[in-house]
Image 1 (cartoon, one colour):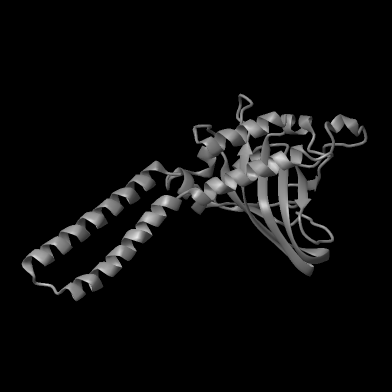
Image 2 (cartoon, rainbow, N blue to C red; image 1 turned 60 degrees about the vertical axis):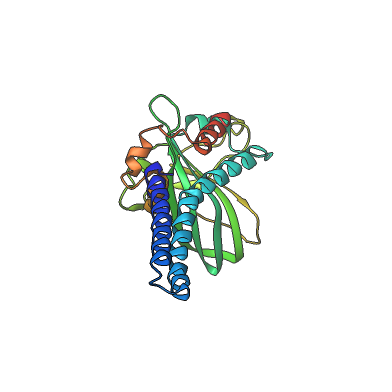
Length: 259
């Protein structure tokens, strides 16, 4: 959440309240405006107050909720019998988490989800989260509507850090494959880590299958502005670990515990 944005909105709330009080007080003293007119003029002022106050309250809350949802997704994966291998998380350079990805279709399918992306810094710690979107369509044996928790593990962070004003196609710009499962990748000696992206999904609906190939991953600039401020960029966020919010701290601790 941007502290500057929040301060601005709180100041705006105080100004609206102050001006409204002065207007009513002056009007009553001078007896120039009937009470019915005062009530009529007061109504839109109160609406303005509620709008600004509500904006100040919820500013950044959706983004914070997205981070918490991503934390829950990671924790759910760690509790699965066939989880994401520890050494894969330890060796990877980037991760994308998309809670509640909506996957729907009948033969032709479509996907839409909002999530977060992090990359590892030079010292091995995780960067601050960048807000992203995942959209796309696919063809195949798909019937129904499905809510999916999706985790994408990237072998190299350059694929993510280069996405700024555009997007990239999974399976096109970056090869993708279903990820190995188990406590370690070495448990399966036949598995070769040759893809750039490895996907893991948990389904909570009825569906015959899910494929991320052909999906586009883009930067959610609106969410970034809401959480970090209008001057923040994805490249800057990917290169730093400045955020000290409780949500971001818990997110990084959860990822660290998966290594």
